[in-house]
Amino acid sequence: MISADVAKWFELCIAWLNQLFSPFTASEGYEQVKVLEYSVDVKLGLLWSNAASRQLLLRKLPSLTDIEKVPEAMDVPLHVILSHMKDVVSEQNVAELDKELKQVQVQG
Image (cartoon, rainbow, N blue to C red; front, side, top):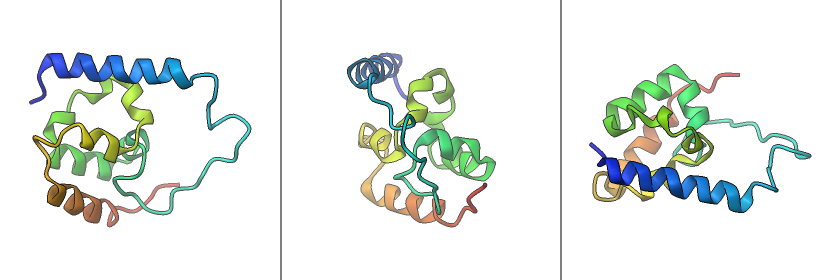
């Protein structure tokens, strides 16, 4: 379980990054990149939109259960989020999760 203080800190960090980089959004004026396979390098929101990858994430990372309360997190690649969870998720766990995500069929 992530402490409430860490959840607040993470939300504030994401809000600050959005303020810092908000004038430049990659979705405006650029062709969207099509994801050919899921991995820890994919934004959490895209992984979350696929039922199979969401179930995998919740099974492997139950601390993400309430992540929808931090909508800014959905625009962040999963590996960035995991880098802030090193006390909970080892590099080996990340590698295993990446391998399992690559087995999930991409929708769309």
